[in-house]
Amino acid sequence: SKLARWMIEGSKIFQPIWNCLQDSFYSYDIALADETGIQVLKEQGRKPENKSYLWIRRGGPPDKPVVLVDYSPSRAGDVAHGLLEHFKGYLVVDGYSGYNATVRKNKLLTVYCNGHSRRKFVDVGKSLTKDLGEEAKEQSKNWIASQAVELYKSLYRVEKMIKDKSPEEKYAERQRLAVPLWETFLMWANRMQVESVAHGGTRKALAYLINHSEGLQRYCTDGRLPMSNIQAEHVAKAIAVPRKNFLFADTPAGAESSAMSYSLLETAKINHQHPQRYLSVLLSELIHLKSGDAL
Image (tube, rainbow, N blue to C red; front, side, top):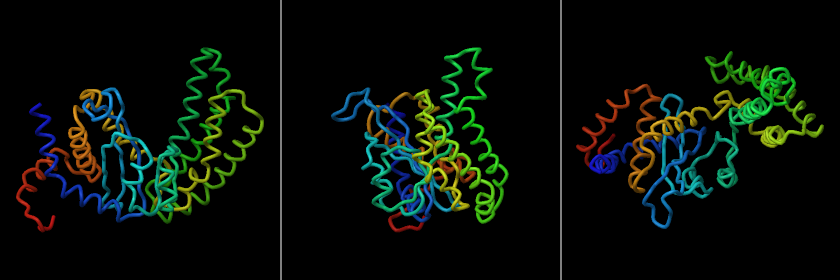
């Protein structure tokens, strides 16, 4: 209980820095978003077993990236809109429909996560392998899911080849190499879909690819854009690993303080700062700031 109080009270000191991080987030036109679950035991009007959420936003200028984590008991679209209300530009997300209203209202350009799309085919392959056992080794190369994964490998090879190039060079190489690969990929996917695939999981993976194809290819239109949402997913993983130990937040105040701490820790990490030292400096220096002082 004492440690929890320290966390809750200590996180309040970080608010001025968090405000600056949010200003930085809104100053750039590319943002990544994701969400991960958290259990809060004492939430008014809800059962302890109900799932709540930590919403993740990553953005800001490339030389000063920021991560913002926010707590909400809901995963509804109005939460996403509140967090992205003033954002304009490209939004990198998976296919979760909760972002759709914000995309429409703010006229955002969605960049769908190819990692998310690719995993659907990978999961189909794992499922078929489990069902078929030894037979799968002989048959797997002919599976539609396996062919889709190979086509994705070709696209990811392009990204690996150009990862150290400038945005302008990335754009040119994607236009030269990735765009023709996408044309081949989608022609193949449409043909597979027309031929009435029998396996339900494969049908769903193909439908997702085809229905989200415009957003999945959008990274090719701007060399600054990532091919996937993996940077936001890394933050979700950084939360999920310790969550196995702390299990839950007792109160909403605890969940909010955790979100605040994760924002600063993850921002420190992506800016190559030592997280513990960074928090130590903030805790020791911010308490001396007076209203109106420059940060």
